[in-house]
Image (cartoon, rainbow, N blue to C red):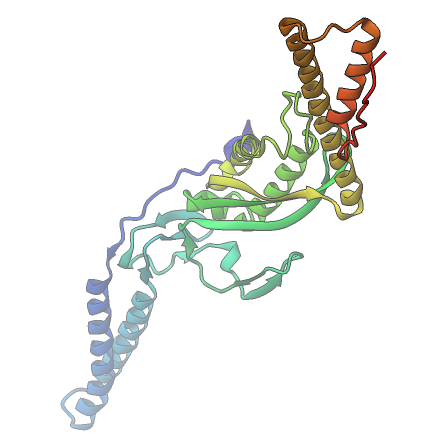
Length: 329
């Protein structure tokens, strides 16, 4: 219970001051500090003020200069669908999510482990990503593509599967406090969910089977992955909008064998339908002959007729008929 509670951080929205007003105040203090630092020596040189008062004006000007610089550090610009999470002396201070120009406590520092330093990475699938030094957290809808993965399905057949995840950050406070790197966390959890889901379903099932398969029930399996992934990343303040399977195929080492297997199954199914149709046509022919009393056939002649008709209807090539000009007996 303590571990679960330690991951929960209630988001606190900062009531920031107007940035333009504080910019004006900071600029006014900066101008006043420069004026004091210049006016003190000038008036002292004209013997209008004493040296002690001159030193006081210079010291006051320096103090105002430092204060104005500190006030400038509290000015923040936030674009739409962005957020900043602040900490004050090591403790969570609040979150700024409203776009605009604001001023907050200049001693607050934004926290975002992803934007702590510049980096350039290249994934195994060839995709590249650049991480800049910004501390802002994007609240926009984003797409995660981890590329293709080779896993074994329920029957042990190696298959390649790839999926994309549509996601966004809904709680930036949890995203930067509960996990070290929420993007890497999402990527790793996505890999694990895809692998675990692919292992409990076969790649394909027979036509008569009601069991779910990766190929035949891709949408249902994607929905299952979405629910499981949402549970895993809920503590990171991430919402999973959708998951789509973008690639599904047998691994190259067994693709040829599986293709032959599918072709054999297709041939068997086709032959079965041909035989069922041929038997029905033969039965219909015998019934019509008996019904119209065109000819009476004994059991031996019926068997010969059935054999000939099945050969003609089930053969791969066109039959070559032989015309008997004599009696059939």
